[in-house]
Amino acid sequence: MDVIEKPKTRKVARFEDLIAWQRARQLAKEIYFSTSRKPFAQDFGLKDQITRAIVSVMSNIAEGFERSGRAEFHQFLVIAKGSCAEVKSQLYVAGDIGYLSQSEAGRLMEQTENLARILGKLKAAVAKQRTSAK
Picture 1 (cartoon, helix red, strand yellow):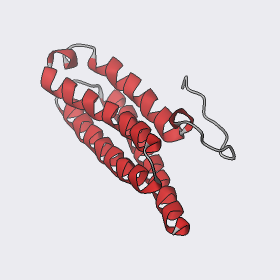
Picture 2 (cartoon, helix red, strand yellow):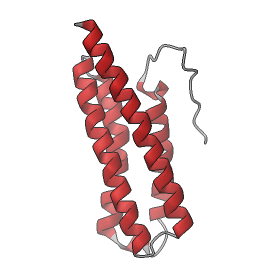
Picture 3 (cartoon, one colour):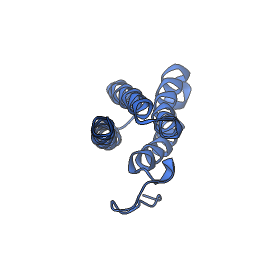
Picture 4 (cartoon, one colour):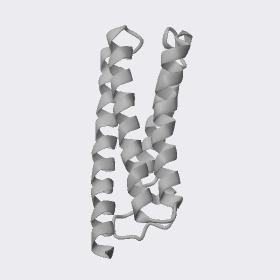
C-alpha cells in the first residue's frame, strides 16, 4: 500500500490521517485500475456506478470529518459505509459476468469488507464520543 498510516496514539488532525480514508483512497485507485481494462471499461454504466460509489466513500469520510460536529461526522460515516456496500454489490456483478477474474474480484471484495469493518469501528467510536460529550 502506498499510503502512510499514522500510529493509533496520535491525534487525528486531518481527514488524510484517518486510516479509513487512506484505505478508501487505495481501494479507489485499484477499482479505477480494474475498471480501465476491457471489457469492464466498455460497460459505461457499471464502470461509472462503481467508481462513483468508491469515490463517495472517500468523499463522505472527508466531508464528514470537516463538518462542525460529531453528529454530522457520524451521519457521513453511515453514508460512507452504505456506499461501501454498494461497491461490494457491484463487485459481485463484475465478477459474475466476467469483467474481473475470480481472484481479482475476491481481492477487491476482501479490501471492501475490511474497509467496511474499519468504517464500522470508526462510526462506533464517533458515536461513543457523541454520547460521552453529552
